[in-house]
Amino acid sequence: MTGIVIVAFILGGFVLGPAFAPKLTIVPPATVTVQIYQTVTETAILQATPIATETSIAGQKWLSPSDSNVINWADAGKYVGKTKTVEGTIVRTYKSSTGTVFLNFHDPYQGYFYGVIFASDMKNFLFRPEEFYRGKEVRITGLIKLYQGSPEIIVEDPSQIEVAYTGYNYP
Image (cartoon, rainbow, N blue to C red; front, side, top):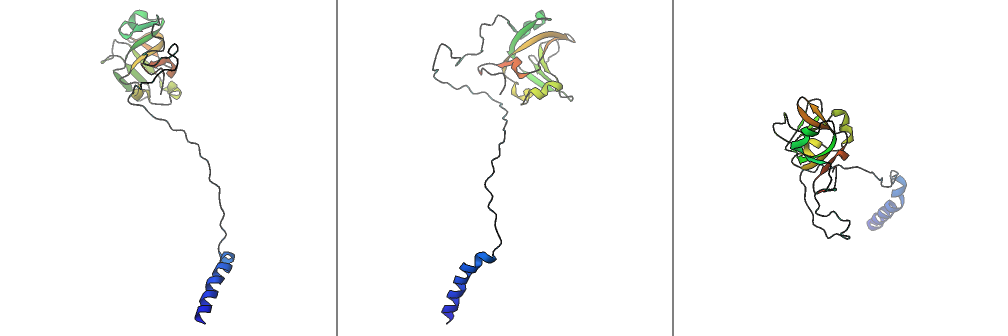
């Protein structure tokens, strides 16, 4: 008799259990889109076999290597008032307390060419230019102005800066 009660109890649980159990709602999985930004601190040069060598820039330092508008950073002071592309290596960067970023081609920077990104233009940079451009060989294009004895280009957009060997203006 005990066996019949146990079997009835087990079977009753299977039959009556769902009726007394709390109702569960099955929710379909949601799709979430997240944008991820990565700050690149080192540049790796990958070797690839170009598909069409006539149009390839693989291994090429600059997008326009023979651009006659390019000058060396040390000569920028000779071109004040002119729009030029200034080439050199960012040896030091600085972000002021007001959010202005300085891209220096010489340390100390006083009297030498530098690029400046004002805080109001930082919204155009989806990365930290003071970190990304530090130590990189670049070309900055813009109007060369003189500020407190130093030639400068005001950089309003990442498209004004090309990084050597990457073919890119920004990460």
